[in-house]
Image (tube, rainbow, N blue to C red; front, side, top):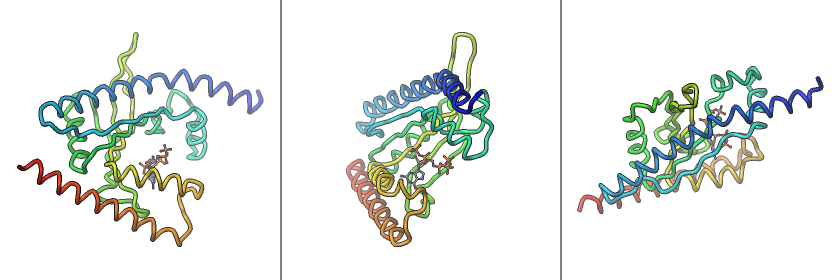
Amino acid sequence: MTDLAHDLGLLRDLERRLLVYKFAIEELMTKLRILSEEFDSVHQHDPIEHITNRVKKPEGILEKLRRKGFPLDLDSIGDWLDDIAGVRVICPFVSDVYRVKAMLARQHDVEILHTKDYIAAPKPNGYRSLHLIVRIPVFLSDRVEHVKVEVQLRTIAMDFWATLEHKLFYKYDDSPPADFVGELMSTAMIAAQLDERMESLHRRIHQD
Ligand code: 0O2
């Protein structure tokens, strides 16, 4: 079989395999929408501004497996890759980021496997966000699958910075030119200060 035919076969099988990740995202989206609406109705404050999601494209999955030297075995892709399913939760305030994490962690069917807190410890370029790898059960017609989803939680200011940084530096693939690094870091600090000042206003209003 040619490489092309082999890859086309893999891509077709992979597309079928990805359905369960779409279901996991739908479940998590429902959980998050319920938390958002219920918290708002009880506390008159919605901790979620908006939510986006994506299932990684089959081509992207194959590329990442190859790049990292993992086996191209479709039955075990979930063992190697944590970010096939991704959900991004944008919150108004930093306290909401941790509040949403805590509310998810209290749910018996949500296992938090890993946490990377890039808010407490930002990346060297200034990137801030809270990343969780969660695992949730998806009930299919003949079995239950436990599916991993990468959840990125961040404020509006963190999202603004990350979106523009991605647009500006994507083509540099991880390492922008040295003279950009300081400027980038300084814009991240402005975003962090904005978060602190908004949080402080929020606290004052909610104490009254
Ligand atoms: P995309 O297109 O958003 O999916 P990994 O490469 O995922 O195996 P790592 O380094 O453990 O390993 O991942 P990490 O640090 O948890 O970050 C994964 C995702 O976080 C990235 O996914 C981005 O979405 C986001 N991210 C991390 N660092 C940065 C950053 O410096 N700038 C921006 N804008 N986003 C970042 P992908 O797969 O790179 O991209």
